[in-house]
Length: 121
Image 1 (cartoon, rainbow, N blue to C red):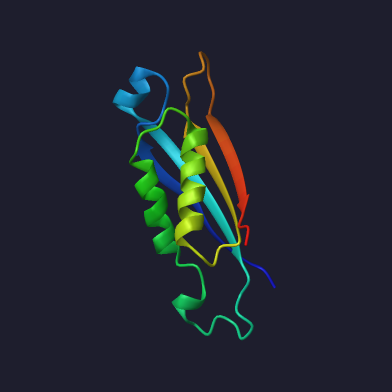
Image 2: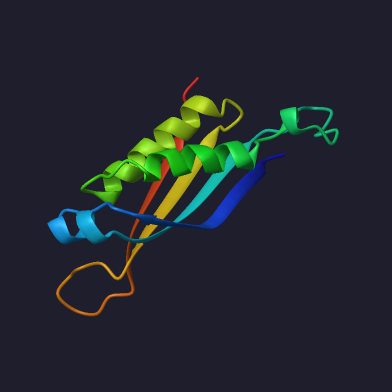
């Protein structure tokens, strides 16, 4: 049995981007993170220690969002590495970062990066 713990639509005002204006004014970013795990043989037992604590996951994502990067690709790498380091139950991780209204010289709702990682034991 696989369990997937997800946080979707995490919304941040942050200062990631290549252009000086982006790093000055900031932008809205949305983060979705999906972590899969194998439940223990005897189940969750209504015990937070037997699953992935999504409050802890949120704090790890928020910590990375506070540190400005030029590329959302780098941001996604840092988030997925940090989460996999600090959440030992996560066997697979997938993070999607959307940057709203990116400066592309025309109308664009969002740019997006999706990264996946599998824990190697």
